Structures are given as C-alpha cells and as structure tokens.
Image 1 (cartoon, helix red, strand yellow):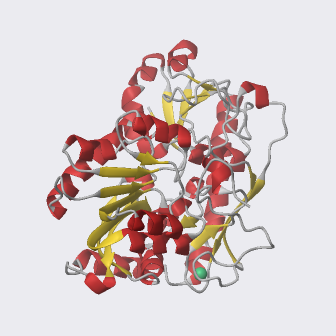
Image 2: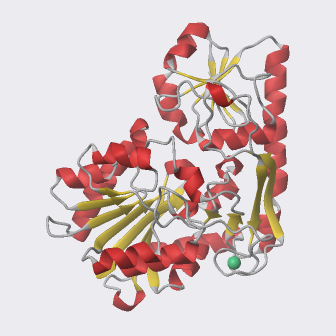
Length: 425
Ligand SMILES: [Zn+2]
C-alpha cells in the first residue's frame, strides 16, 4: 500500500505498541503522558467544525536501552504533511537565522558554484534562497506540496517527496549527491529513523558535511517545554542519543553548537566516520559531559519529568481562572503546533480565550484543532483590546512583544506560559 500523491511516504506501524524506533527495544517507561490530543497541525476550516475529529494518545516514552525519547506514530506522515500550514518565511527571526547560517557555512566549508547543497524538508525555500543568491547549486526535498510550490516559485528546484534510503539511492544513481546536506527541524519528524539516517549516509559525498538542527532534549527537560511534544514530532534528541543514532550508520558528529531557536536547539555537524576530515571539536566532548552531569544517562531523570508537566498545567489554569473571575479578557497570539499541545492538554478553549491571531494568511480564517479557537489577523488585537495576550510561540516572545508593543497603550499585558506562567507589563 502506498499513500497517494507523495512518493516514498513511510508507512505507519499500527500492530500493538511498537518498539523503540531506533533500537527496537520495548517501550515501557513514560516520559510525559499528555492525554488525548488531535494532530497539532490539523487546522480546521469553518466547514469542518461540526465533523468528528480524531484524537490520539499523546504519550512520550523513553527507551531504557538507547535513551531516545519518542511518541508513537498514529497517523502517517503523508496524511500529516499533505497540506502542511507551516510556511517558514512568515517568522522573521527564523529567516534571519537561516541567512546567518548560510553566510557562516559557505565560509566554513568553502562552498562555491561547483559544490552541491541539498536540504531535506526545505519548506518554502526560506534557507536555500540564500545559497541560490550566491550562485551555489541547491536542491530542496519537501514532502508538503503546497509549501514546496512556494519554493519552486522562487526558482528553487524542489522534489516533493519523503527522504529516505530509497530516494537517496535514486538521486546518487542519477548523479546527485551532497557536499553539504542540511536538515533543520526534520530529524524529529522522521518516523523511520534508521531508513532516514541511512539515506543521509548514502547521499553524502565522501568529504561532505551534514548539519542538522533539532530541539535539544536537555533544554526541553530543563525548561519544562512539554508543549513541544506533539504527534508530528516523533523523536526528542539529546547529543547522546543522536550520536548513537548516527553511529549506527557510519556517521560521526565532529562539532555541535547550541542555538536559542525553538526553545533551545542543537546544530550538529557530521561526516562519514571513515572519511572524517576535521578533528572532533572539544564542544562535542563538553556538551556530552554536561548531559551526563545533568543525568541524561539515568532513567530517573526522565521519569520525574511528568510531574513537573502537571504542575505547569495547574499554574496556567490558576492564572486563567483568576483572570476570568476578575472579568478580564484573554486572547492568544500565534497558532503554532506547540500551542495546540498546550491548549488541549490543559483543556483551555473558548471558556478562557476568545481567539488567537497569526501572521500567516494560510492560518487566518481557520480554527485550532481540538479547541476550535478561531485564528484571526493580528489587527484583531487592536480592535478588541484584550487585557492579556497569551503568547503561544513563547520561543518568539521577544519578537512578538516588540511587534505587539502597542497593547500596552490600553494596559494590555503579555503572558508567557512556559516554563511557568510569567506576566510582562
Ligand atoms: Zn531504543
């Protein structure tokens, strides 16, 4: 069986609870149980509001053998990503992040018009456009046809496909391989992890470099960022677990950077272990040591996380109940996937929050999954003048507080829910 429309779509595994997606050990330890939740990226049109909506357990496990934190796969990636509403170019800070990465990596790897850059999950071309502007050949791979079309319209060659071993093999046979292979915020979304990493090793030239960015599990734990857990986000990596995953396929991590993006991310640099051309950075050893000191090799650290999640929920509800009893109005800002985990887990709907707003025209006019809060244009905030603005993409809070600074003119305040409720005047 294949899913229509998207080549290479991985198949869901539904026969009982599957084992670990990296090492296949049985999953028996709970990291966080967030109850039943709809798919976080399944925004609804007005015509869908009376339809039944599928909810699935949102339960993160930790593997006691390889320490990969993961959620079970309930719906196929093809179904999740066929009409994906996330267009990277609508977040200013993310576009700037991409531009400065491109400047850095071109210098570091001496990329030229005769080198090939391939990006997996290239979205709407937010990153590859900067290589293209410098005359460096690019290829994007993006399974969501609607965002891939936006990239193609910028002149970025984009294949609408799920990346994996088979696709890598086919590209190599057709003469395409990568000097630089980029994957930002894709590793977490890969259900067939071994197939994906095997594909990286195949398409990477002997002296080529892979860079991948993904949210850092250490920061998720330290910052109680439980709302970054959602069904489309299958795996949650530490440096320890990603090294293990890459080593299985002959790839070695030779450098790592900690980034502020998405609540704290890692950017790893990898090469073929057999052809490693750069000395291992001391940053890898240092971060591995910090993870070990924090307890990331001990199961009990993972098992304590769930209780902190419940306390975060209680505090947010406490704030909202008090605000509503005092007759205050609350609106939300943003419609990110993480907001849907937060609102559904905490049971926050129209009883607490009137609406949310988002800059992306692809989300405006639609409704949040599960909670059915309407998504309006940000101008709505100025029209209704809410007392509180709950910032759902808290990782962008500085950018949002500066864009929306005018709410202070009527005494409006910003509320950030994670790691604990904080009110900014
Ligand atoms: Zn495992």
